[in-house]
Length: 506
Image (cartoon, rainbow, N blue to C red; front, side, top):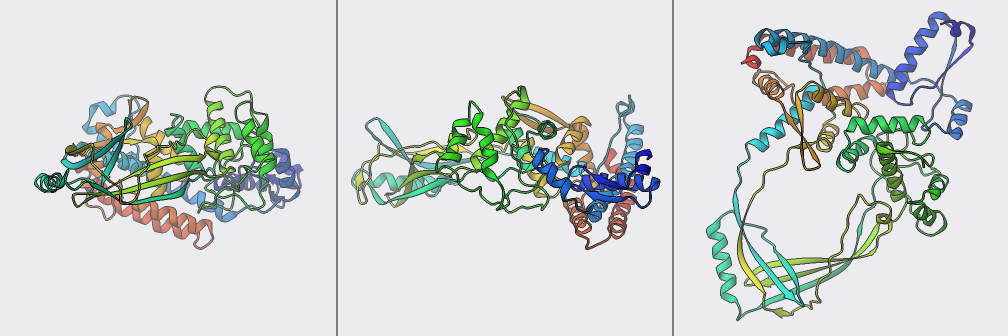
């Protein structure tokens, strides 16, 4: 306040996203209490590096009030709905279950938190109710020079044992008099596409799946590296670079790295560079996540996260991997089979991006119309396997697809349902799965028993709310209209839920 009274201009340097606009507007409101006519400007930047900071200072813009109001709407809505439902269900459940009265146990509810829990419970129930079914398939293979080539049955597999036996018996009856015959040999060039530029959601998924780090942990590390000037702003939905983006200066900074520096040199000095692929998303605020400086002294998880982002950036600036694919189609006893081989010709981006695998598998030489006696022709039995429980990466994907939370808040919602003991982390080997606790299952299944117009454990209502917030952000509807509509929806459901909450208790 004191500084505002003495200043003529206020420059907002908060993070350049919706939340940053909202914080900036709060700063403006405080400062204008001290000096009503203070001039307000907004600095726009995506990385804490000298070039961008100087440019932002020299070319300030106006604060985006619509973005700030959309965040304000979310805060007001989540606070009102969350506090009302949390207080109601905590008090009722504590009266009925003594263990919930111990300590400061709060049985919290959140408009994003609850659908997030719903995804975990839904997948758990699917796994729990799974019943394995037997199936049958014809296994056909040929061994030449000690190498077995397995041909895949075009029918895949059949669940009717009698039909499978009938088909197999017919195939067997034609052998050896009528051998298997090669109908077609197809050879073509194929590619393994390099990765798209990196978004916040993809960083969280990769961090969980590849680095075995919780999404919240990955984001915290990326935020820290951004503040140190090593990364661009790590909260972005954009998976396409601007056509004018200066790739070479950033690639050049990676040439000093003892591990991937040689690859970076190939991109700058050779013909290895290829412009990154263009994804479908552009938030018009920040470029994809990329390294802004070389970081050679990092250790531990900071080093692993930085290395993934640096390698991802270099891979996106390289060429797709190239291979030669051979497909052999075979007929045997009126049934059709095929096998595919691959020879990797150019690894390209795979040289620097070990997170993707593309292994070659060569085939013997086959000619069209060639006939051969199969080494093995058997009817084999298998059975369907149950689906896996949700991983954090799976949950991030579901939340993003269904509009639950934003790229910046998804990780926080997952952490919340774990901290509330609604969900338990379970390791199988090095993979972490999410399992709902008894409390988590009880809440979701109890709410599903209540006769509500829209299920609170499903993503539909929150997805609609997020779309309305985008409308506010783009100035098509006002914050007041959006809040009135959404709060009335939740108010009606709150009245019904309170009246029928005994269904949750029981």
